[in-house]
Amino acid sequence: MMFYFIGGTMKKFIYAIIFFSFFDLFTQLPVMSTYAESLGASAFLTGLAVGMYSLSNTFGNIISGFLTDRKGPFIILIIGLLTTGLSLTFYNLVEEPIALLIVRFIHGLVAGFIVPAAFTFLANATEQEKRGKGSAISGAFVGIAAIIGPAFSGILASRTSVPFVFNITASFMLLLGILAFFILKANQVKKEKAKPSNYIPISVFFNNTGTLKAFLGAFFLMFSQGVIAYLLPLKVYSLGFDSRLSGTLMSTFGIIAVLVFLLPTNRIFDKVNPLKTLSFGIGLMGISQLLISQANSSSLLYTAMACYGIGFGFLFPSVNSLLIDSTTAEVRGKAYGYFYAFFSLGVVIGSSLLGWLSLGTVSGFAFTGFVLLLFAGAILIPHKRPSHA
Image 1 (cartoon, rainbow, N blue to C red):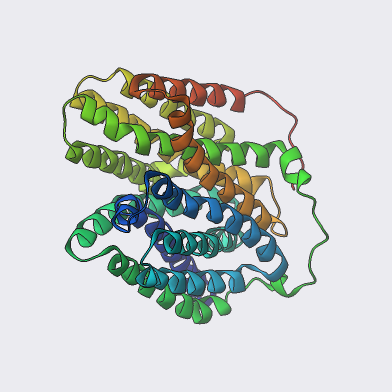
Image 2: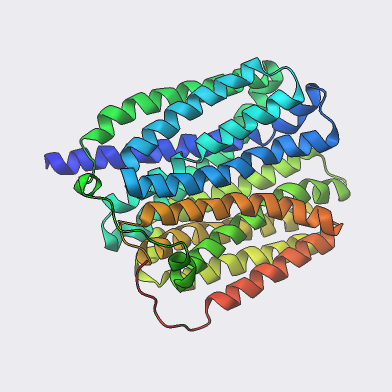
């Protein structure tokens, strides 16, 4: 009974860490471009400041994966939380664009340590038959952060300042880092004290069909998110609506996704092959992108975003379950490192590719929809069941 209580407390605490890690990410979205401009940054430097976090975050994710498998998720998680909290306070020192770029790079790099270590800790502590439901619950905290974060920073920054908003997030991160030392120390997996596992070449993960599809699922999930973030406000504006509709549409998607994560239907992720739910989720997201491209009223946009929310709600737990099924505890940290590196790359490429291709809102959403549907079909192509990485 005592073990159950401690284990339950540990999981809840990891969920809190996941929430604040993504809260840190989502609070940046509505304020970073205007903050960079207020420092006198050019259009190029403004775009670079926005993307710098995701770029260095990719490297942080990969480094975290390697260190998590070598040292265990406990110490990497604490280092990530404390250094991220410290890096957030550096925004108080920024007075020019170049300094902002340096702080963005440091912030993204150290923040990249947190998520792979947190999900590895959670995956190793979750019973195999409940890994789908566990992934859905963790996804709910990501979704809630996506709903609360932008609204929180947008409102508070307009009344105070961007560094003040980041100071609040820094306080939570530092507090979580201190608490993690005491709460998680007693729950370290004994394997962490064992001798380091043998060297695992990178090619193993990319030759394993399960992990490869999980990586690509993560990439296309955030590729789609990048397109939504870039094109949806433009689509709303082209139809003659103001920016408030963009916000409510994003909230609609987030709320629907959270409901899919938390309702009893989340048991489906433990009963159905994750490849099938992954294909269903990415397919729905593709259909929603096609619907948005043709939408000419707010009601159609709400319908499309509700469809998108259901797809997102199916996709996130599915890629997590697929990754857990395709790896062992000894290499799971490294796998999650690459997994979240693909997350970061998806955001950068999704928002920038359409700009490079000079696609408008209709053709941009249509292009993305077809790409997602093609991937949904490719997921279901039969293959030999791979051995665990």
